[in-house]
Length: 225
Ligand code: PRP
Image (cartoon, rainbow, N blue to C red; front, side, top):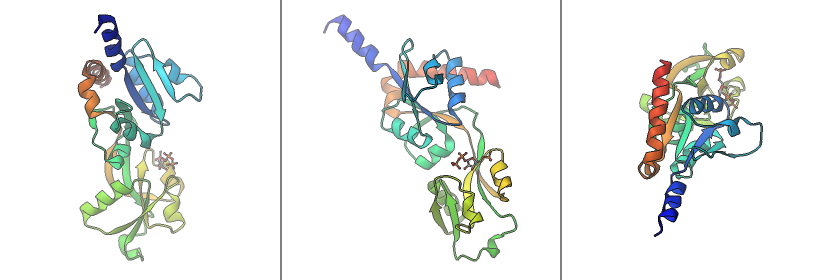
């Protein structure tokens, strides 16, 4: 095989694809990647594009819904992903979690009406409204409590307000949404933050491209401390 063609093939296969969660975490992910020497200018342009490039560093970015980040990375369509630990716990996919990026810090909590104690809940099993059914199930299973899950996709606080559920399991960042809706944190399930995940095969096959980037991210995070 000719040397030139071989090199081109290797270069092609060394391109890394990073899936970023749209929304709250995107800007912070872009800042961190930029500090690591990557060009994120295309990502920052106001456009409807879904795929972005840093051609100099041979990096491709995908901007997708947070819940889709673990899907892209698990299927190897993206080699790396930046997404919240809440989304990872809920996805339950076999990804390598490489770094805690320490931004996007929130708690996953059980919340409801403070005065509505467990005994006062009249339904036979606690009804839990959540966009995290897997996390909620695991949490209550650990406690040995039977629950009924009501899966919602947003505005979860409406559950107890409208009597659809007794409590909610949701992320709490500032606590403002709960407060403004007359609800309180009843129990804390766990703390979450943004994480860097890697596809298990990519880590081996693209090690030379991925390892230095992870090392640089780690260095940047250490410098922040
Ligand atoms: C999340 C969460 C709460 C809110 C918590 O919703 O579901 O509603 O943020 O943040 P706070 O403690 O700072 O008020 P998100 O904004 O992701 O929208 P959603 O309701 O559409 O899920």
